[in-house]
Image 1: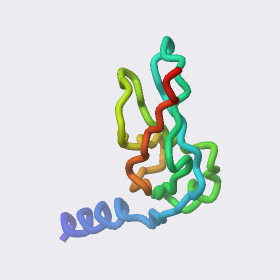
Image 2: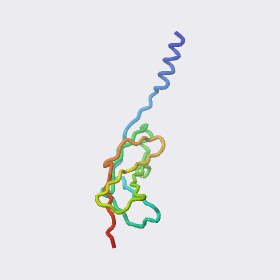
Image 3: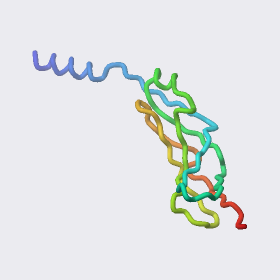
Image 4: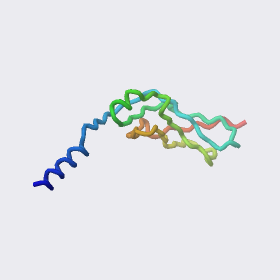
Length: 113
């Protein structure tokens, strides 16, 4: 009986009321990341994405758009046509990244001179 009581206590204590919620942040700018020696002026389309995150209610309430980073890594990319790159998302500690929409953006290369 004592073992069952200890098991129940541990089980319920580990399942205490940790409520997680989801939050959608819209219109987050996509930052283009490329090698430092690459001076081309890359652009992406669309320039903004929507990110869904998950965490406890208090953390999400204090979360601001500037805490989430959406970027496209173009390191090592050469000129190409119809190139689509995946959007990478960084979130702060205590927040879980769920999804980004769109998942990919079109890379627009500057015109040749």
